[in-house]
Length: 425
Image 1 (spheres, rainbow, N blue to C red):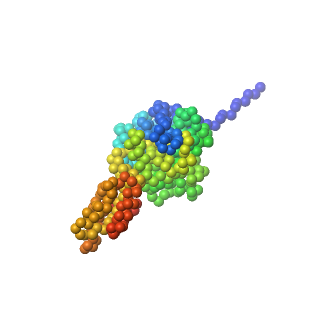
Image 2: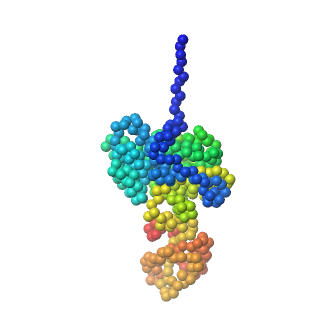
Image 3: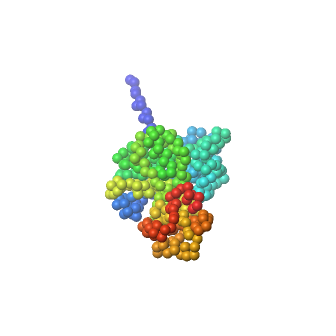
């Protein structure tokens, strides 16, 4: 009598994600899923925040790093030297996990990385971690880390473009669905390199396929949307690095392979200045500290049509809270300019007694001069000044420019002129 053996079932992506999530419990608890009353009232919906800014390293990056290290050390327990490149958050997750496993590592970060992220990386890694600041962008640091890996024989831990990283980040999706009695109507995810998005969308495809997915990128680094439009991976000529946690010039091969069938209209581009409004709002009203990449998902709500929001259950993954408060003056400045509450002008001032008084008399009661600088004498009878004005309503600037026109002043609004404002302000 012959016996037959049932064929072994192939392990699915979801199975591997669950294994990663189970192992992750040794390093961290699931992050909170919190309904935000302030945002819910504003948008007439249930706005729920998945607080990845509350992991031990204040971002979701710990998840992917933990899964990569676990699988690499299981395959070869003799590995001792690891290396990574990061704009900050992956570095902290890398350092935290390397310290947990007792191995050494080298972290390559751009010279533009906020000091807070550098300090925390060193703190989490202790004596096991060496930080090297190389290049002005993530892509330059990445190239340096890959070269180091080849020369030193160190195991490279990718920030996003690896199946093990994607599986680890996917645990965010498992936690969201495990914590909700009803499936969300909309899920808003940030996209930089694409590791988080590639992992979570696969979880939702298997467990909540009717949930609408919205992706968010910074307007100054739209590598995902550009790639979708082109139908293949593209490398951007340059990126705005302000949203440092999501500003990459080229997303990953593995991540794009998962996401390439999405429609470009599913991607919302958030202006860098506008995200500053959201950072300040969440800090001042809710007491929630978010870095630019962590505020993208909330800010994206401003761009969605009301009918896609009202009455729906929407989850925003607040991906990181590693905010360097030395950047707060810049964030406030950019937020005011985005809201239309601060403007800069170059103005020709007649060189005669009383001319400055004439100008000041044109200002309204809520107009505050925040910058006044004589630039240079351009003619015998005129001089140029740079003047910055802050007010409490956009309409006040319409009134001011009408008065300037009526009084015959010659001026130029340079607020949105990146070249001129970048030099003078």
